[in-house]
Image 1 (cartoon, rainbow, N blue to C red):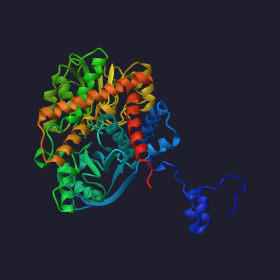
Image 2: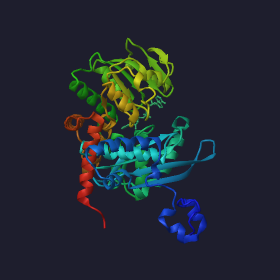
Image 3: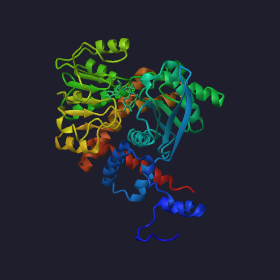
Amino acid sequence: MADREDGAAPSGRERRGSGGWDSVLETEAYDVAPGGEWRSELWRVAVTQFNRAADLLSLDADARARLLEPRRAIVANFPVRRDSGEIQSLTGYRVQHTFALGPTKGGVRYAPGVSLGECAALALWMSLKCALLGLPFGGAKGGVRCDPNRLSVGEMERVTRRFASELVPVIGPDQDIPAPDMATGEREMSWFMDTYSQHVGQPTPGVVTGKPIVLGGTAGRRAATGLGATICAEAALERLGRGVPASRVAIQGFGNVGAVIAKELYDRGATVVALCDVTGAVVNPAGMDVDAALAWVAENRFLRGFPGGAEATRDGMLETPCDILVPAALECQITAENAARLDCGLVVEAANGPTTPEADEILAARNIPIVPDLLANAGGVTVSYFEWAQDRQHYAWQAEEISARLRGHLEAAMERIAESAERHEVGWREAAQAVAIARVAEAARLRSVYP
Ligand code: NAD
């Protein structure tokens, strides 16, 4: 192939255009840079966080590349019949980040922003979360790009069953175990488990967690993520010399996770000053009746119109004066744009990736500590682990045993984070990531390279 006259190396596209199969087979003939598959804002956030902690561990470039890039991914395009009879094509993803520590584990979400890059970042965080908690899993994440608020129950079932059937070859109790995430819960996990079981010809409860108890679910899973975040908030406040009673709390997101946190903190004596969901926010500096908010949502599906306080904007509610701010909805909510205006004493990241690296720096400069997502929402996967273990033993544990073990796991992880923060002289996020990355790196090193 002739060199270009300007001396620049020919681009991949130029090489491909100029010479048949031989040039196509050269690896340099491809335009996608290493890691380019996963490119997304959330992947950028995940890689930045990872590198900050990897610097503390002095990990070399090869180790970083090996630990960062997901092991494999599935992109599935499939048709779904709408209630109207119309056929709609949807895209679903499953990213399995690493098998270094065991089978992979991670949620399934239905949301309009689901993409390969988003799932890659969330799968990486799942690996690190499991490593931080000492669970025998790697991370995975998946989802379907759709608007769940516009799907009927029948359509949700058809989406779930078709997506599950696309994943049958790569999931299983010893391979990859899905769980609930945004817009999925016990109902979707039941359909997921049934679809998988029909395909393999035997009931297989251990293929998913977050199931109803009668189908092999566990006591405590429904509330586990929110309860876990509450336990972490308590543990963090204790280290800061503060406490939950009389703390003012603002919570963004009132779903599986946010609603449980609101109730748990309210029951422990906190004053809930702001609540928010996709339809808007309600703010009341004197505090809201969380039981009334839960009853309102049970009847009206959304918070919109809840008479417990003044209406506010979704973005503005993050700036409500409070002691504990709990993002429990979406990623990238606390950014360089609004971090300087937050008026809180502690951020508890119940959502995955709610804070950008730029906002991290602003909050650190303002001495606002963050209980990072790796710990704050790890209650879900921890109780999922208990559910998976019970399914394998065909033996159900008691609710008290589950909540005591959950508390033990989270408090031990908080201890590891505090010790790492002191050793490296960093905040809790970098400290948590350093503990987790070191564990995955050790597993990968011991397993070495196949073949
Ligand atoms: P969910 O779908 O049950 O609830 C999400 C909530 O966020 C809903 O109240 C929704 O109305 C609200 N919301 C959506 N868009 C919003 C917006 N633009 N502004 C404000 N609110 C908005 O989801 P979930 O399971 O509660 O998950 C919430 C977060 O917690 C996600 O980041 C998820 O990855 C994370 N998480 C969930 C679990 C779990 O067990 N469900 C476990 C770990 C982490």
